[in-house]
Length: 121
Image 1 (cartoon, rainbow, N blue to C red):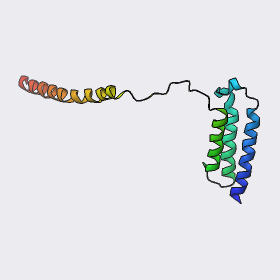
Image 2 (image 1 turned 90 degrees about the vertical axis):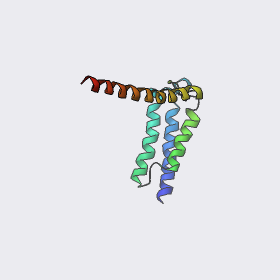
Image 3 (image 1 turned 120 degrees about the horizontal axis):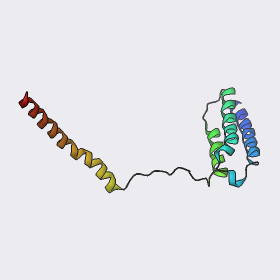
Image 4 (image 1 turned 45 degrees about the horizontal axis):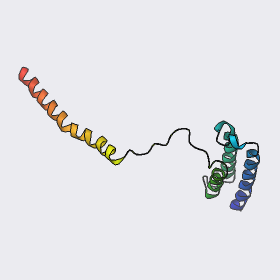
């Protein structure tokens, strides 16, 4: 019964979200200040009704609606900040090996300086 009630209510949450998104133009679809209210309303509706009905959250049905919103409305949005990828393998290898090669040199330098310090004392 709880699952059926939640299924019915989540459909209402979705319908409300779709209704709110009708006021958003295509040019505004990727502007967070414009879409944050409808998106937050959807998320809050799904979560608050799950809590109200003692239904677990997050759950598969709620996630389905969130994914559906991304697929229908936000699929063509690009990130303002670039996505960073791992550097090429040769650069990565150099970044790993360089500090490792410095360690024996630094250890030798510390030992040599500490021996030199003992001789002066």
